[in-house]
Amino acid sequence: QGIVKDFEGNRALDGAELIVQPGEIVCLIGPNGAGKTTLFNVISGAIKPDAGAVMLSGAAVTRAATHTRIAAGLARTFQVPSLFPGLTVNDHLILARQEAGNAPLPVAYGEFARLNGDTPAEALSLSDRRSLEIAMAMCARPTVLLLDEPAAGLVYQESKGLVETLRRIGAAHRRFGTT
Image (cartoon, rainbow, N blue to C red; front, side, top):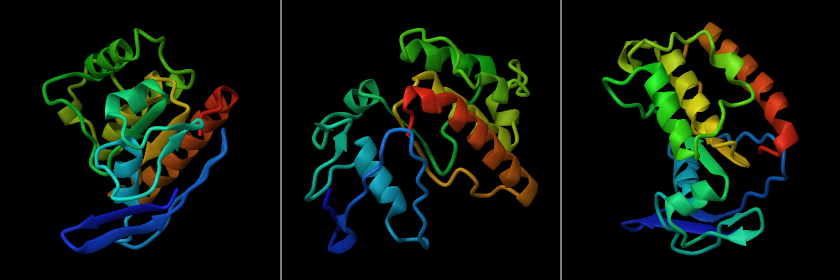
């Protein structure tokens, strides 16, 4: 609500407002430099706003630490997949599940079963790295999932496949109220 963020005199966000209902799917569209990632960074707690409030499931989390927001049901992915070099697909999923309290694999895990569990993350294609990061985020069974430019750098067929995967994941997780 009313998010303002300045960087050394440059206003990146000027009263940004975003209200999303449980289970709703929303796309935030704008040109490079419009503040989309900055808004995601404010929502996720990576940066603090200069003004405004961030509410998650009705609770103010504006000044809460990132881990508090995660515990409250927030998960996100990044423009550039953030994976650990030297770890396999399975290692990443084990870590994500442990972080989520040894949660079972996501309901829509079958969408990611095509990823070979023994493959090192750095050997995956960009499309598969993005899929792995989404699978990791879904291990937390988030109520809010932020996907920061999930199709960036993908060719048309990969983007089309990602959209279909996201639709199936959304359908599987809507019953949990994942937004």
